Length: 476
Image 1 (cartoon, helix red, strand yellow):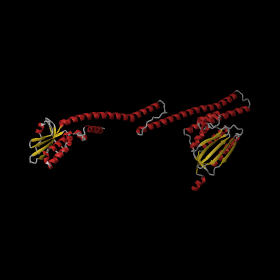
Image 2 (cartoon, rainbow, N blue to C red; image 1 turned 180 degrees about the vertical axis):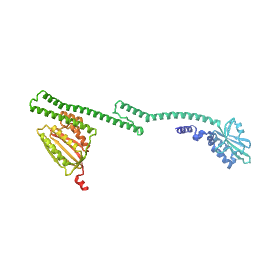
Image 3 (cartoon, rainbow, N blue to C red; image 1 turned 45 degrees about the vertical axis):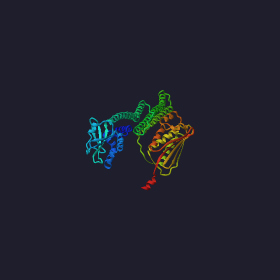
Image 4 (cartoon, helix red, strand yellow; image 1 turned 60 degrees about the vertical axis):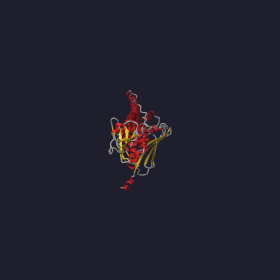
């Protein structure tokens, strides 16, 4: 900063007096050296004449030309022959100074230096000795009146001072503006953004168009705000789903409890007055208690799966043998419920998957139970189809029930939505489908549904294949 100010000041000084102050900072700091340099060319001319043409010092025109050049340098020429001044390039009386001029042969000056004479006047003197053609001794003196130079320096000093003050003020203003625009204003915007977050407003970004560290800080702040907003929104949705789930489960539990309470009161009041009525009442109470047990078990299982604390026992399963056992059991249950059942397997022999048999069976039972629950036909139908894809096994479970609307279909695997659907019997499935989704995803597969109202629903899920048994045995 100081160097810049000095450079600007010297540049300004040069524009004010180019002839005297052409030596920049050094010339301003050392005025004697500056004046020596200013008269250097004239001194060299005198020196050359003293060596090559001493007769020039007797030529009035030559002396006048040299003196005219020196006048432009605030100097004048004095020629002494012996002890007598024969030429004086000024009309002013400087007798006392001329008396102090060095004697012939004094080596007090050169082209780059001179001698200072003070009191009563201040002069810088350069001397060049020579011999006249008649053999007498002569000396040429260049006298620079410092009294005329110093006011220029005083003026320049005041100009430099005010220039430095002006430059400092301008620099301070520019630096303040830079600090404000680059640091203070972005930090204020960051503070405003933090205040908005404190007040609960997570919608607005902090907008700062900068590529430096402040810009990176703002980008990180905006990313934090977005993640915080997403986290809070997810938490709000999760808490709402939990409240809705508790409300829906409470409603679903209330129905069988009310039924059990009514049948028990009937027995206590003697309404079941025959063995047949008593047997029917007790069976109804037993079935309602089983419904409650299933609902509570599903809720407990979902809680464990949602918290990732359920233990999985993954092992290699032969898909054909496993599903043969499943469909035998499922077929018997559906036959007792008066429903038609079909099974198709298009998988090749010895196809295997890595799965937990118990949890996979739970998926099958939940889907089948939903198919039975939402069948409004006189003769319900359920079919299971296995297909072998490139690297997956696809299982499709189809029913001819009431179906699901196109608008509701994407939501049937949502927890609270399923509870509402289960309670209102609007088609689809209840809490069991959420359990199915989590179990299949833990197996690395996918689950989805296709449905049309009054035409039935098909639930698809996939399992990842592994190398078949025969290939493994041959490799061994």
